[in-house]
Image 1 (cartoon, rainbow, N blue to C red):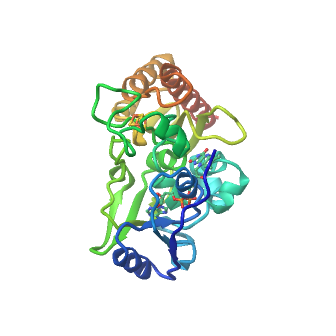
Image 2 (cartoon, rainbow, N blue to C red):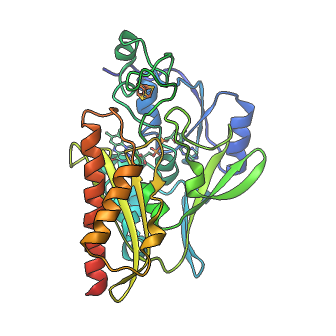
Length: 327
Ligand SMILES: Cc1cc2nc3c(=O)[nH]c(=O)nc-3n(C[C@H](O)[C@H](O)[C@H](O)COP(=O)(O)OP(=O)(O)OC[C@H]3O[C@@H](n4cnc5c(N)ncnc54)[C@H](O)[C@@H]3O)c2cc1C
Ligand code: SF4
């Protein structure tokens, strides 16, 4: 059962500069965009910030810009707008598919790209009401001192379950970040850390402002498994970007979500350049995926099922994209 929202004050900046200043002037603030993740956690007594900096009124964050240099997606663009954008649907298909597979229509209308990239990590011992967590002595991620999933360890294994990040990783995205020390641009992969308690490499008060995608992307696709097909986080999600020349692979990039504390690019796929898509290659990809994913007992679905399902999704997507490319 969720409790009422705790009391908080709200800033409504109109620019990124104002948002950064509002956060700086109120230590312990949190940014809020669509609120579809943050408010759920706050109702569960997780975090309880007393000051929220609302990003939803900042026009400069809400644009998708398409130029010869590629596509720039503002962090405040909603998931629904992303899923329906003609250029994204036609050319960056994995991204459109990932966006369309997020939650339900209401969440997609409110939820944003920035919120999705900065989503909190998830675990069955964490996404619970305050009374449930207190009755179980909390856990390492919030207020407790041990992990129920890996009691011997000292780190949290909660899983990152955002759908957009793997699609962007496979498509080679970079992001802009703003804070009191100015702005910086990094590869999206550098935003994430393999630690369920602190999985974002953002300094206090930094926010993601935009995502950049290169022009002329290869063919791409995204698929996920989930408990409820109509509305659910990925138990495992896979994005593939595949460029072929005839029957040969020119480049293959594959990214995963739902299995680790960060979304990540599968290492070792550059070795597939020049090869054709056959059973031998698919078996090698399968082995790479199963070796690099690290699902833990953070969901009601078994960790091994998520490992095997991730590999099966990877095989299926590569086969489908390869067949379409050869047609
Ligand atoms: C029932 C349900 C099902 C869901 N299913 C899915 C699903 O299938 N797949 C999925 O990916 N998500 C799912 N979600 C989560 C959520 O709806 C989406 O991930 C959404 O895109 C989050 O965006 P938001 O703008 O609402 O984030 P918010 O809740 O506003 O913020 C989320 C976090 O990101 C931070 N933040 C927000 N914007 C920025 C920024 N620009 N820079 C830095 N930090 C920022 C906030 O401080 C907060 O910590 C689900 C949620 C619910 C309630
Ligand atoms: S993995 Fe462990 S520390 Fe992390 S949320 Fe789950 S129980 Fe808590």
